[in-house]
Length: 309
Image (cartoon, rainbow, N blue to C red; front, side):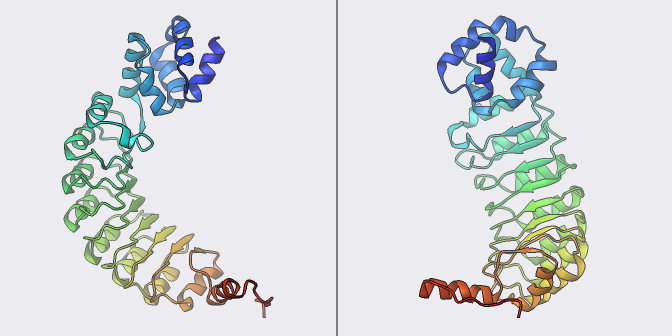
């Protein structure tokens, strides 16, 4: 029975009989060292949704889960976001001061500065913060992350239109170890802020500036010239970017692996071809290939053409 319960625990405890089984063996399970065995080696493998449900099994399990929540290094609320209340979120992390990774993607319905700021303030070792789509936050949250989490390596701010130049400059000034930043659809940002970020955070490897009509060649060139280790760049929908900055990317970023330029109508094959020869993954097909696809859509078949000629 002990093995059956443990197996069901790791797969999510989807049915209540498993909880009853847990009750029947709780003496053996809970007698294991909590902080040395149960928390790091068992509960760390259990989905967060199940961890939350386990609190209702018994008072002892509730105490165990509180110890786990106070000591967990990774907290990903994304799968549960809409189902969690702000009160529950605050309760779960009120005693945690060792977080290294925090993801609140899909929590836009309820998360605000009031809930996030206390968590940020007491977790200075955070290295990864994902706030994608958290539209209820303000620049105060980004400034707090900048000032508190100086060892930050990844920050996700996609579709956070409250991000402005002032808060991004604060990030650049205090988070020099930043390697990945997602600024997709942060439409308040302009070239000046992105250039400042690139000059301060020279270790950037992955950057998304997608869906921002304010971004021009100036920002892309600053990223290329200052962040020589750049591996992935997303410029999808940056309508003002053209061939000049793409050539600069090819010249200054030898480690570039992925480039997204779909809907960049001023970027032509002339600037992309050198990158293709280096096997860079580009989301826009060569003109001839696009023509063949279009022909196939129209005629129902494509003629056989030797592309090596």
